[in-house]
Image 1: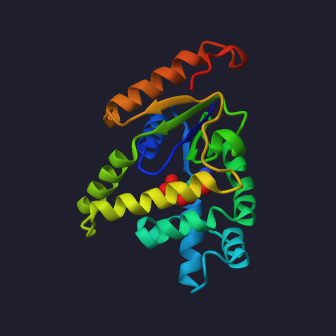
Image 2 (image 1 turned 120 degrees about the vertical axis):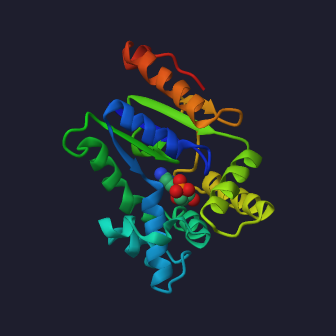
Image 3 (image 1 turned 45 degrees about the vertical axis):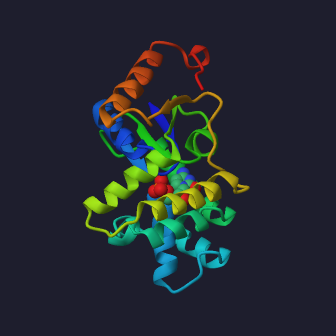
Length: 221
Ligand code: DC
């Protein structure tokens, strides 16, 4: 069972994906961490995230340790991640790792949940289930602001909203693998849903469609 979960920042897709994986006995890969780790390596080396050579080199030499770097959630890294994510050479360097993970998840797992921006459209177009999680920009900015405050990071909500809008635009407008809803994805708007309600809706979708063959499953948008 391969589940592709896509959506913009702070839509709730990470929490949802982790919970789905836990409930269904699947492995979980947060593909955003690959782009964040690439960006962190570029910044640490003092290179420019817009430089395709530097960014692709960083992506190609990622190690497991890079994925656990403490600065991955910092705003500077978040912004640089959306810059390196627009570089085709970076995306192709990370593509095989993601596909291999889905094909051969860690031992004992019956499949995998991958979340990101292009999982259902580019990385795993043949995924068994696809979910596109979204929420209004204002709600997502509010969530990210609260999350930063809870971690003791000084934050101004208007600034979070503006940066999120800029990152959304970069993710949606880039020429390679832009953030987009797959034609056969279940669209889950979490603007008015808490994490439990979003999880129940996603789980119901995954379980209801297991009874049908993939070709005949109801395509929802
Ligand atoms: O989901 P996130 O905020 O951790 O993602 C960080 C950046 O990486 C974001 O700008 C989008 C980009 N990304 C991407 O382009 N493709 C993915 N599959 C995952 C993330």
